[in-house]
Length: 60
Image (tube, rainbow, N blue to C red; front, side):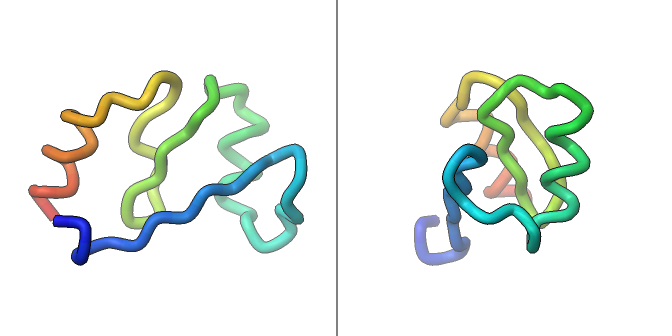
């Protein structure tokens, strides 16, 4: 599974967010961190549930 996707971590306090307009829009809505995006869409907010992420990626 690991070879089928690319993962990127964005530190909202350290990184330049100017290229992340979708992500900034979601942040302004007040979602709980961390926010997990899959295929460019926000899918999960808050605690990372590895099993839910695995099942979501498996469906892609």
